[in-house]
Amino acid sequence: MTGPFYPGAHCAETPDKPAVVLAGTGEQLTFAQLDGSAHEIALALRDLGLGVRDHVCVWMENRLEFLQVAWATHYAGLNYTFLSTRLTPDEAAYIIGDSGAGVVVVSDGIEGDRLAATRDLVGADVQFVAIGSSATDPLLLELAAKHAGERLVDPVEGSDLTYSSGTTGRPKGVLRPFTGQPLGTTLVPGRMGKAFLGMDAATVYLSPAPMYHTAPLRWSMDVIALGGTAVVMEKFDAEGVLAAIERYHVTHAQFVPTMFTRLLRLPEEVRARYDVSSLRAVVHAAAPCPRPVKQAMLDWWGP
Image 1 (cartoon, one colour):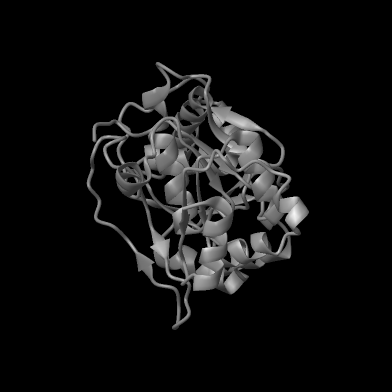
Image 2 (image 1 turned 30 degrees about the vertical axis):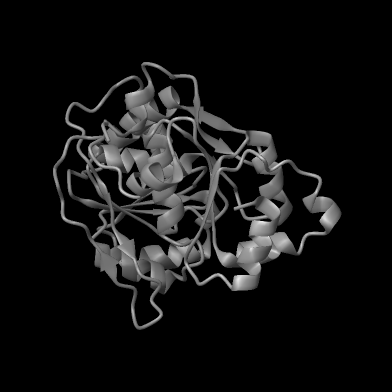
């Protein structure tokens, strides 16, 4: 497989093609917009003192800015950790401290007492910047706007620093070795997606799960890296899945078995209302899929 694999690699041929689409609202970012914002946000993160191989945590719900920030941290060569929006202050503070994050990017969906308590726990050495509106923290996109039109001169591959769910003691971080490779060198799950699932620049990938999970984040970034489009649901809704597949002509998607169960519980007349014939491959992961559930999905969506 030849690269490079990152949004900017597709700007010459398809600058106006959607790279990211929010399923519910239809808001989108083109490849040119995503690449430009990634450079500008990366430069803003450099202004905050983050250098290559430093750590950043991102704490936000599914929204248009999510993949902007994800690609920016990747362009900047950072180790990036996305925090569950369900974490308590103690749980969030532990991961922020354990990862060694110097900056936390937080959305206005996390504002309030929970953020204030987390800030107290991590101490003054950690900087907080906001996505959305905040009365207390600098706004990351305003910092990025100071670099409008500028580009990094030394982009290198960043890496996601993922954490376990913490079912046995504290969550455990898994840090991959730093390669120092030029931006766009690697394609992690995308190798499997391209080889076995036929993913390419024509792929339209539906991500129905919270993006802070490893699989939705990696699959979405790799589909974009291949030149395809990531359609992100703000939150899971069974009928909304079918509507998104029909509206955006989704070709690939990844679910957990519980989502299959909720899809199968839809009334037959609702299931029959939507055209899902664009689907080419569907992956299920994260838990064993009961045989009857999988067979019912095969009977509905095909092999």
